[in-house]
Length: 460
Image (tube, rainbow, N blue to C red; front, side):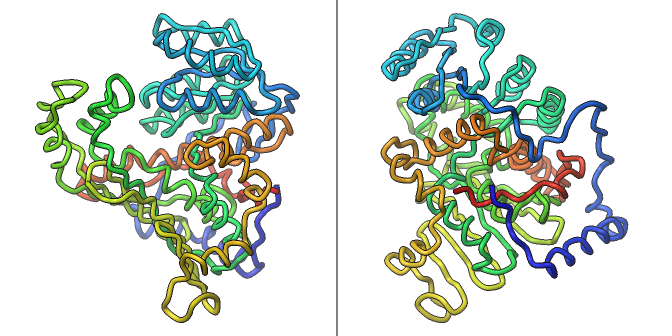
């Protein structure tokens, strides 16, 4: 890891801001945080935590459906992995995944046949790392149990659904000395790594604003059997907010080094549009997984827009829409005092660089600039990651980095607190929407530790 570099003036100004933040909060009560829960005696802060090196990483996985089957196949191909167990509620899925893993030279034990089979797996196998790719409501329970069983936990997004669950995850990670990482794969996309490198090199100056989204029309999931849509549809019907913020927010938060030395999350306001599209789609569909989808009272707005303000006063717009018939986008925009980087389509506008004043550098011009700032990790692993696949290679690169960090005893690229901060947009946005956009303060899951946590460096 190579820590990010900041000028002495910028560091002094940030320190001054943070010293005066308490005075500002007293003047504007909505900025004040609730009293922080104390950290129990004998536990450690996990911001830059390094676990003892593992020559071989004994890997187990819970859930090998839509996401987990891909993770299992890719993990089995990574050097240093000993794939020891596969668990799924459905035995046929577990068997199929085991077949793929076995082809790569592993001999995983299969656990299935009951809702608590995964608990039996933890006790019998004692894995080093547990990968969790199950429905959202199970994430927190499984992460906590895995850590208590002595394993590092790696789960699909979001890390949990409630703030209490997030605090329980943090407390367990600190008490057990085990990693708990939410696997935000988008942070390993080529463009996201490139922009991180450019930001760290100061190409666009001091960061001011970001835009993040998950715009992905997925109404057809209501028709895909017992897979993702069968349980996500219920979430969308009952909850109104930004339920899936991390794909867009994760990279932007890392550009800004939020919840690390430079800055942290402050507060959020959120608004949702009327809920129309899901009911319309359900009423006309003849292939619904569950006929009751036609009669659900859909509460979640078709599009949610949330605004985050950081401790330093920077802003991030976060949008979520899995309903509207519009092109896919994560926005991926980061704006600084010297320029702006953006995605969908990829564009760069930097003062003194590119095609001219008030114009985007796109296509060939973008590639020319990108070649100069390609992230060293992508240079090293980009080609093989793209061959291995998984959302263009970002899935494999994420899994590769997890195993590499465990084997080398390095801090993970995403710590437990970041997973909780990014996921907290879900419940905070729901509360803000229900209160007609009233500001909601982020809990400080680090209990002040973010001030001494190194920003994510540029990994070679």
